[in-house]
Length: 466
Image (cartoon, rainbow, N blue to C red; front, side, top):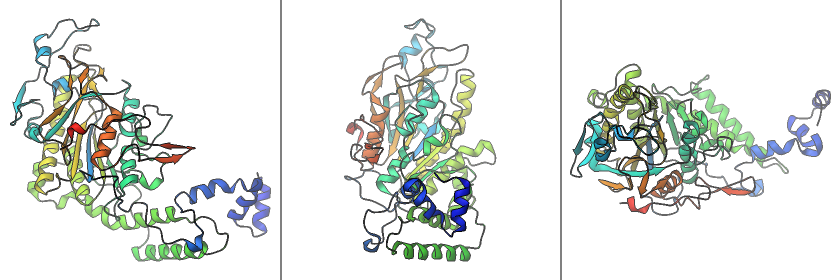
């Protein structure tokens, strides 16, 4: 490699940095740069290369899609299913008895009632969500690989529980496979993602090109680094100049790969400066809509703001929106914690479903609600429940799934999935299929092999399709 003195000498002779990299160590210094800049360039001569479509343009699915987009309501920390969505009569009867392994069976202290024409049992903690049960497709036999939050959350989002083997997130795979419906907006948005349990890994692209990464915002609509530092007219002139210079360079014999990916990211940021702030400004919504969601100032209204922003983003054509609510890790303070968590999420989640349906969006939007795993039917200390990875539920609503339907069951105590068992990879394969993507065909070549979200596993559960 060239040392600092040699670099200075080369620059003094008029060599550009690109020429220096080409000559350093027989050209090895240029390889990383060429790889980064040529990541998405077609492998044809520059002079013969037609204008390539952007990487985020809408693409045809592998087969007929039942849904166009996903909204994921993620309850981080593992919500206790036997206190909310999973009524177990036997557990209620055997309260206080010894379970296999010596722990004490603990019934729920919350009252369950049957709702809708399906007679689905739901805890009184979710009175508003309960009114929508006839829209729900419950997946009740989920299981995953690890009881540790960071690994389980990462697996739910990326398909692997190994943090050191970083993989692209579900939203990134969807964007890679389908593009986005609105070229002026990011195709994948995550609202209030937790810095815990994986952080940016959960909405990252890993080895996929960077433009498929999730865009992080908070519940006030703040998007980091979006504020323009120059007038729009000046930015437009700068971008046009860069594009012209890039076209001239591409037509030069022996020119390096184009920097299309970098320029497109600037173009998207430029367009977002005018579109995104207006889209995320929920203050212009009618008072009746704000009240329906329960929008209030401060932390108490955070999840309500997220849900309303998710509807606006989805309506504008964003492919994947995740909204996050933490604080469900109830090893202690279970009952007070559940009352607070459910009160914060029940009304907004129900309002989101009603709003989507009223606007005709629920027929093309898939809503997913759930946690990284569930809780045990036994006591942990005086007021807590430990992690359970062997049987827990989620619910789906909207495009593509059977309404008023349950798939899979757990045993009489809600401990283990016994019928219709679905692993996390099965959930991923099924979600992709609902959007028209074959999880075995949706691959990306990296490090000498074809990677996919489900790796070498995953089965599509078509029984839940409408």
